[in-house]
Image (cartoon, helix red, strand yellow):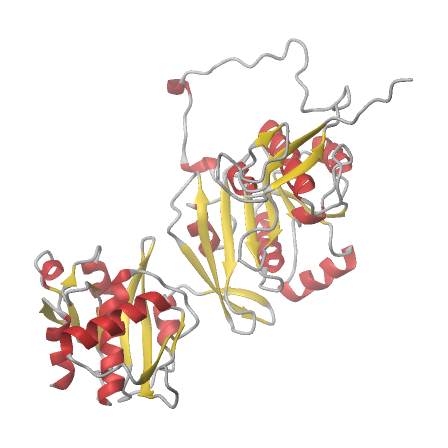
Length: 457
């Protein structure tokens, strides 16, 4: 009697590349030990993913398609709309990732309250919390009005039937790691389950025109748990960042098919939920000390928004044989490079000093425009000379000690002028393209030596 063998396939959990046999290294993305085995099961006759007879799609001329701003639905939260590119696009699929307890569910529940009050039909589907737990969080956020329904379910077949019958405008899935597709082997949260569950939800989103928000947990490396192909399948990927013990939160767009990926949204956590921070510069500079050495204000551009940051540095004599270098919010390798430039080009004896650099407020910035401010803060702390607290500095520092130009210089200066800053140190190349700005004096510099000379005045 012949025994039927199970049909299996191997696929890479990093890029989704499939293979009939297991391989140690993926030939597509070159990742090692990334192939996992998955059992193939034929979909039932009534599966919505199977092609039905007579349902052949017809191509549409691009000139027949029209777009307008009305096609987007406002979430009611300006910072969230900014990151999404102006609002939620109908039929889009949005992945929201972040550490546990960072506020993902709170943000989406607040958005549900605002959209339901504007007449949108929503369903909040939770696989982790009970209905009472969701109601308790909702009571902390305020009064809910409109058509918002709650559902506790993890079976995707049941969820699919409910979405086809209810036809909501927007659906929240919290979280994708708890969803289960009985047609796929593996436990909820496994690579195969996450990938196939996302594929089913994607098909429902596109066929029914439903906007679906998916909450995803992150790994130790900070990426969404599950296969990397998950981020390729969805339309938008958002990461909710910040220290859970601090009050601020940053919503950052990593991928967006309908807008820019450089925008960020800033929120403040309080007992009643999340509050939007419309002026992050003023918020991040609050509490800055006066006449203190080792502190310089810099300006970073996040998308279309200039954000003023306080760069803090502490340089002191080391008590060990090897000096310690530590950074919070800035790239440590970049700081080591800047310290080497200061030692070589300015002759500063920093080889036996510990150096600590911090971006106040907990922001993480890797833009090269912060180089000049970091270098000035390190020298200010080393010489114990305070920099004018109404001075702004920005520019990229090269290995020869030159200060290179950065983009959107005029926008950075105007933001500083609005907050009362009187002086600005900037690259001479950038200053040549800037007109006169009232209320602020410009100091163009060619090298980091010229910028450090301003500290000694």
